[in-house]
Each structure stands twice: as C-alpha cells, then as structure tokens.
Length: 88
Image (cartoon, rainbow, N blue to C red; front, top):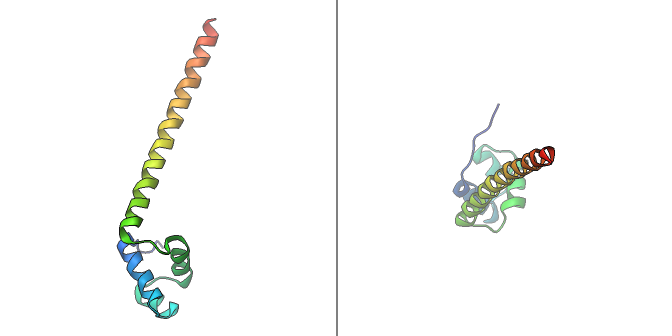
C-alpha cells in the first residue's frame, strides 16, 4: 500500500510543528505518518525552508537529466570509436 506523497511546503510545515515543541508522536499521528518517516525528514531537510527544498528538488532533477545525457553521449562515442577502428 503506497502512502500519501507530501509536498515540500507540507514537509516544512510538519517539521516546524516538531521544532515548535510538539511531541513526535502527536505530530506523526496528526499527519498520518510514522515516527521513522518524521525523523528521516528531519535528518534530510532540517533547517531548510520551502523555497530551498523546491530548489533542491529542481537541482536533483537537472542532475538526473544531465547524467542521462552524458550516458547517451558516452555510448555514441564508444560506438563511433568501434566503427572507426573496424574500418582501419
């Protein structure tokens, strides 16, 4: 069963509730998540605002796209090298 996906602003709001002094059990129960998820978010996103989180997500997506482009170009280069070596 797949759980609910939270947006960056929701995650930041939940972490601010935790930092404001609420108990971890209460915050987790209110939002329908486990304490482990709450602590993982805290470890990963502590001290970040919503804008910083969305910027991080955009950077990760760009990095994934660039890695994919590099892999395709490296494969093309390798194939071109093999073709040229066979002709010689």
